[in-house]
Length: 394
Image (cartoon, rainbow, N blue to C red):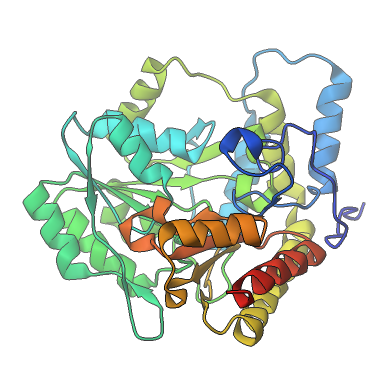
């Protein structure tokens, strides 16, 4: 049976579906009819195989306590082997309802109140939120931009922050959200060696690993044996297959001691099994979703290229940081010379767009906006046209 849901051009009405993206604008201080391209989910119908798996669960009619059988791990294992050339073992796997939950559990398991956790801003804002909410200190190894606007790691500062701050936990984002870098093997080895030398545990958020446009995704734990012993690799089908609402993530921890500590903390939180629908969806996605995945990659890549061309042609004062990975585009508005309030007014009131303001990703994100281009082309064209009209009216 062939994949049925390969029409990515049709605009699907998501309003009145309890969608965080579409139904909560007013509750979050936005105009009711604003066009949302902020939160990182896609406006595409999921793979028909995943739909079939969910439908089969619904037709059975019983949703009791559930756990994954062998087929679940085999599907996850096969996907990781095929796409990342990494051989994972079933005993390494810890299933969680999401990557951010795993980050919070890692903070509790491996640090104490008042300890510092290292991140690289501008970065996915829940990183700093879970650190601060758990009464730890955010230690920032800020990314630096070169003259072409490409982001890099500051390795000297990275090591200084670890040693002077007595850091024991580092959150790596690869591919990086929001700046779109796909870190190279050399870059990862440099920070990996520093972390290993200083006994720093690396929690690697690799949730966007399936969306790589330039370079190759390098699974951190697969680079060296010693990295495997001090790392926690966070994966999930949620971004790849647009099933974030089903709350399923696969966390791989080769080191038995670290795995035991994290599982103990998860148990202390009161959490146990994933929901049955999420388990079924994940297994179906990894087992049968390749055709849908390849189709969505082609479509998103074309949307990124379209955005790049549009910005260059109609928004010359806005600089686009072309993503090497993810379906999130980082736009630099600083040449407009607007204050934070003026930029917000431009985006929200004049353009009628709901984007992610760069300041939530850290101090170095001020003056930037993150836009999600995983949507039908018609929606993207409309959004960019609104933006161009607003900017050109200044």
